[in-house]
Each structure stands twice: as C-alpha cells, then as structure tokens.
Image (tube, rainbow, N blue to C red; front, side, top):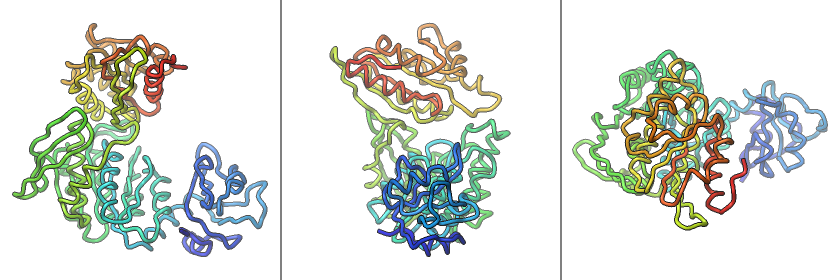
Length: 464
C-alpha cells in the first residue's frame, strides 16, 4: 500500500521532488531498509547522505535529502528539503493531520515502553493499530513513527521520551494525542534535572499536546502527582487517576505467581480483576494505567481486560526464559537487560526475590544518568527489601563497585568493569536450579550476559 507519493511528500515538507516516485514505508537505516521505503538521510553519528546511494541500490523508493549526494545522479528519486530533520517532522505532522485515528501518547520515567506495548496489544483487537517501534521516542523517533502511520489507521500509540528539559512538549504537539498517559515519575536522568519535581514538570508537558477536550491519565501514587494534575487542568484536559491512592481506577490487591500477576481493582464502585502475563507486581500498576487509557480511547473495560491478557514482555524487558544445561537441569533467566534506574532495579529484584529457584543470582550493571548522587543510589541497592532473598550479586561497571562494596560478604559475588570480562566467568557462576537476573543500563551491555548464559546452556564456552 502506498504511504507517500512524491507530490504528497513535497507538499507536506515544502520540498522539491526530482521524480514521480512512491514510497510504502519510511526508513532511517539502510540495514533495515525495505524495498520501496523512503530513506531519510538524517545526520547523527554519521551523515545519512553518505548512505543514500546504498539505500537506492537496495531498492528505496526515494530519499529525503538536503542536497544531491555524491555518486547519486540528479534524476534519482529524491525529495530535496532545506533541513532533513525538519522535513521528517513536517512529514510526521502531515501524516497525523490526514488520519482520523484516535491517538494515545505515553511517557514516564519507568515502564513507558512496556505500557506502550500493552496499549498496542489491547487496541489491536479493536481496529488497525499503529505504534512506535522499540523505543523510538526521541526527536527523530516520534516524527518517524508519525510519518510511518497509514492514513486508514484506527488507533495510534506514540511513545514519548526525554533526556533533557524541554524535549517532551514539542514532541507531544507533533503527536497531538487524544489521550496521554504518564506511567510514573522517578529519579531518572537526574544529571539533567535539579530534582524529581523538575522531572515531573517535564513529564507533565505531554499534556500540552493534547487535542481539545483530551484526557490525561495520571498515576496518583507518584511523588509530585499534583504537578501532573495541575498541568493537565491548565491545558483543559480531563484528569483520570489510577493507583492505590487514586479516586478513579483504584488498585486493591496484587498477587504474583511464577510467571504472571493477578490483580483486583475498582473503577468508581465497580470491582474488576485483570491478569498480566509477566512476573513483577510493578506491571500491575502499568497495566491499570493502560486499562484506564484504553477506556478513554473508547474501548469497553471488559474488552480491554481481555486484550491485556494477550500481552507479554518484549526482549530485554522482563522476559523469562528456561535454559536447559548440557549436564542436566536448567536455569531460569530473567532478561531485563535493556535499561535500568533505581525504581526499575528494585522492581526487578522484587521479581527475582519472589522466584522459586534454588539460588537467586543477580548480574547488575551501572545505572546511568543519575547525577550527583549516583554512587549513593547504587550503594543503597544493598539495603532494599528484596535483596534479603537474593543469594549472590555479581556487579558490572565502576558505579556498581559501590554496591559491590556495600553488600554483605555472603551476597558479594564478582565485580568487573565490563560485561565482556564477566561473560568469561559465567560457567563457574551458575548451576542447575538457579534463577538468574540480568539488569543494567543499555550501555553496560548486559545483553552479553544474557547471550553468554544461553551459550552455557548449549554447552559452549562463552566467547568474550
């Protein structure tokens, strides 16, 4: 199906099309580009113009550029604009304007990607749903997601993230959601903010993009929830609260099984129950917010609960995996290696502590962007309640050295500066019956630990 014609894209961006082309997708990476995609030559670590010729050779329908790149003929299918980033944003805004889709925006310090996937799973059963890929939630990820949205979309779920002040509001205005959800506010990216209150103000900025009469879904339990409420009301939104202290969707009870969570809640005076197919009581709170948001999107609560039951976590975000060992027995892996901050780290340790393995082993990597108190925040992980039921903790990274030093002798495992060094020692650190957690910020490459554990299961020594 044609997503963009040359004339439509030129009108949207104010650019000049060199040929009469069509595109059925939008890509920023030649490694994942599909034939017929419009290749967007963004400038990041490298100038995307260097890859235009390669993109066209791979079958790109056209390329969005600010100049004709070297080695590309003048009559190649191009859309020439003054600025490629601005062109992508214009394309996204045009895609948003031409659709009648109900649009959901989601942000939060923790859980926004998992919640985005929950929302998508629920809405897919209701109509044609378009959603952000992976964690495409930044200054290029949001307009890229919008530019990829088919005009006949019924529902869209747009994830919006930030690292610094002032990022969320312009992205929210591009997405123009009918409903916006803030999953939580926590001490994340503190090196760029003076306080958690500053983070709350930035997260609340998603409500600045709401359409007239839109709904703001607010976690009533978070610190500075009043900042979220005030911003929502200032922007004319109706506020819907969820949480244990909420006035709308109230979480009453959560029971954790080995690989799922069962929760009970009320909306108004009406009780209801829902299941989440992943271990971790924190998922129940995210799920309650997702249910509230979907009802505001026009979905019946019973249908939303049914859709939620089909969701399961994606790779690196709490997936459970059984690894059979060559010598017999198996290890249960909790792969939460994609990201980490104090809130999500404690939640992951809660899941590990509740597991039924013979031993509970954690491989923990540095938590980044925590600001001046980063060392103290790492050391404090030694004293969270869940740590009492963890048998051994292996630490990776210079910041995690402070946790390593704070642990009691019986829990203190190995410490290495990198995951690569730790991988080489894996065969001696695990045994049949263990439950193993891998968690750390993405740059700490805890995925190497995950892959190394799988190789141990295959009977091959991990290759550092």
